[in-house]
Length: 632
Image 1 (tube, rainbow, N blue to C red):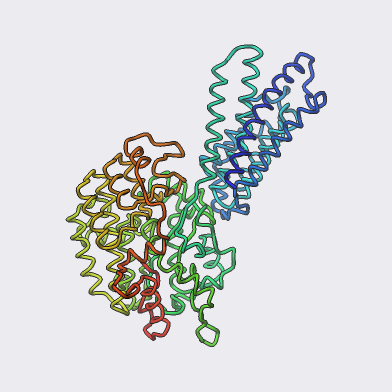
Image 2 (tube, helix red, strand yellow):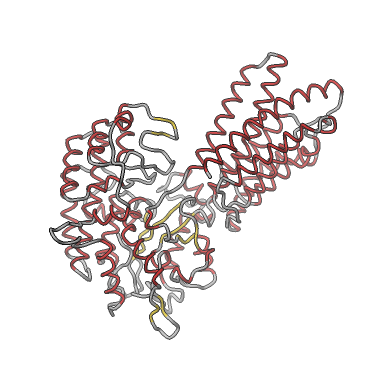
């Protein structure tokens, strides 16, 4: 579909230019005759305009936009109306007091970019305020404008942008509909230059603007958040539905019992939050008490998220985020743009009948469960992690930092620098207690010291099986190696990079090189090119780093926003020989977690098997909350 989208975007640009060229010729002709009714004299001109409108609609249909209400909530809508107030004051005269002459192209451009593009694309204004401003700005001009079909496009784009669930989709809709206006202006200025040979610089300016609009459309279309294939069937609960559950007196339920409206799209959502928590009950993961009739976890989770995304927090900036991030999160992010990975609600779990009998997973649910299990650790290293450490009053058996798997998850998030946004207090306590800064570059001695500390810590914590402890220590070792490589590449320590890569090869953790290392889903090869370290590129390629992996923006290591990088490191990637056939992400995780081949035997231990043993033990254990089933 992306190729079809590119074709129609380019066709829309060409038709817009053609429409502008024809329009300026007809404009001058009718101006000389004293009539502005172009469509009445030249019926084929609206045909060209109509073709452009259909092309824009087709581009929109192939854009992958998800339509629906954005679930903004009353408080956020009130903020949007306040933001739009000055825009409405500006646009009202156009609607109620149309000028005595037809709207000029400059007026048209001002109306669109100041009244629709600016608040939508930059400020994130969404919903009914955007639609109201569009109607008020276009109502008077629609009748009088000689380019009325462009005004129809503006109205059409405003309606479409009103009913998009995700802010990414709204921006894409606005860019699609802005393109023909920019291209029309290019054709218009080109026509004036041909007729009068003046203002040639405006042709160049509008050509540049048109190219930027085409480029922006293509970038927005290809921008997606890619997850490991094993998590393809995992579900992510949206914040809007969590609010609804809390408001209507519900409690958290396993994902099989939640309706489709409960889940959002992690590829499009603006914020993806990973929850790390300890199960309070081996079946329901939460407990109900007189003090918490809906359970403890739902209330605590929603409160923590609302502290970041509620409009009521508009004036309560705590300084952890930048001011612009805070204002955008509280005022522009709707209930679909925040999705949460909460293991009990995200992958198939066992349930309970009203009589208290255990409901096992079906074979299909078990398949989804076992596919997701070995890939979940990647989530904690790539996306912001929210640690839920709350326990009922008087409960000393379910402390978060007393669970081996919770500490493993925390460590992965710590190494991935994913704790600061939602778990800053816990991060500060750990760094103060252990004299460790997660944001300081890690040296080889730091890595060895940290590995020893965490190994001793895991040795002292509770696991159901010794094999689980071994797997957890292997996980920590792999992520320490990945973090160390990341820092050494940026520091330019090629000797250290070579040593770590050799160690990874000896420990059979080499496939770690294929995994993303940051929120933008860059691999280590992306990082080496960005750091302009050709020697690091050669070392990574010689150890099997993939050359064609794409990041969040769809860029390969040799690209920057779809443009080829020209530095020496990028040239080294193009000239090097990477692995053509890479193991799947499941194989990567299985090998990384300490798999060893022994003569005459199959793999002695796999991460999936260890996780399954852990789950089976909990399934048949009477130890309430003895294990946290959110694999790190």
